[in-house]
Length: 134
Image 1 (cartoon, rainbow, N blue to C red):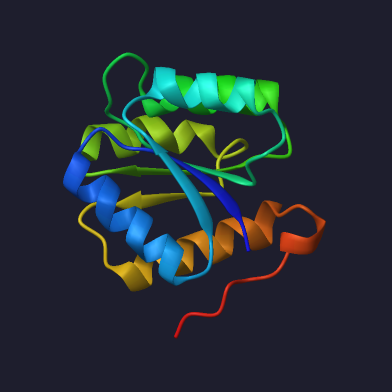
Image 2 (cartoon, helix red, strand yellow):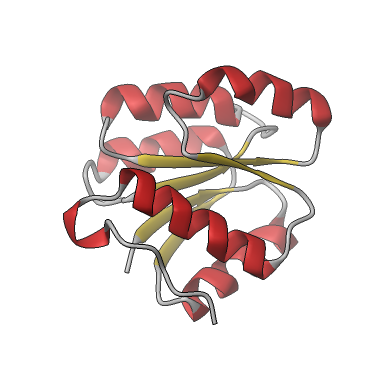
């Protein structure tokens, strides 16, 4: 399964996402903001298959993080999430860099489906297959 880095500043949602990813067999690491996420990506370059990041976060927002992450690791799949309409519009210009955009609130099934689609679109070898959703 995939190695996923989750960047989400809301603790409750971060925990919910981690539980859902673990239930699906993924190995996930969570950080509180975009700055911590970039540090993790740079410090463990090549470890992560997918970055799941909120757009609106302190320190570094998800769009700046996506741009930096894509520059540092072009093989990294990137999936953004937001609950704000204006942020969805900002992300629409990133079509060449990101594999999808999750709109909050989302269900566990939505999360599984988007992760599988992102990995199928830009997976790394062994991960280039959709995850089955129970």
